[in-house]
Length: 141
Image 1 (cartoon, rainbow, N blue to C red):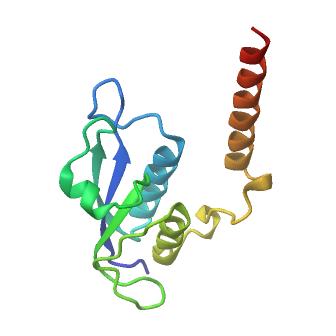
Image 2: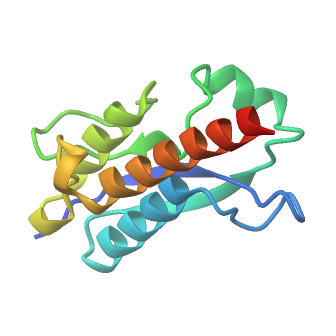
C-alpha cells in the first residue's frame, strides 16, 4: 500500500520562456521520478518552474543551496514513519534521499550512490571530457 505523501517540487525553467520546464537533466530525472511515484500512489506533488534569470525572492530564501530539483515536504510520513512536513533538502544527495524515503513500491527507481557505472555518471563524464577538449582547442588558437 502506498503512502499519502504530499510535497512541492521546483524545477529549473527554460531559458527560452522562463516558464516551461527547462533542459536540466537532473530536473528532468526528478520530474520523471515524481511522476512514476505518483502513478504508483506513493505521493501527490505540485510542480513549480523557477526562472534562473529572475527567481522569486521566497524561493531564494527557502532554497539557500540553489539546487534543482528542489523539494519541500508538505504532509505525510516517509517509510520510516517520520513526518516530512517542512523537510527541505539542502543538497542533491539529500533530495535523492528524500525521494528514496517516500518510495515504497519502486526499488528500481533508487539512484545508485556510485554513478560510475550509471548513465548519469556517463553523462557527467562526457561533459567533463567536452569541457577539457574545449579548453585544449581554445589554447591552440
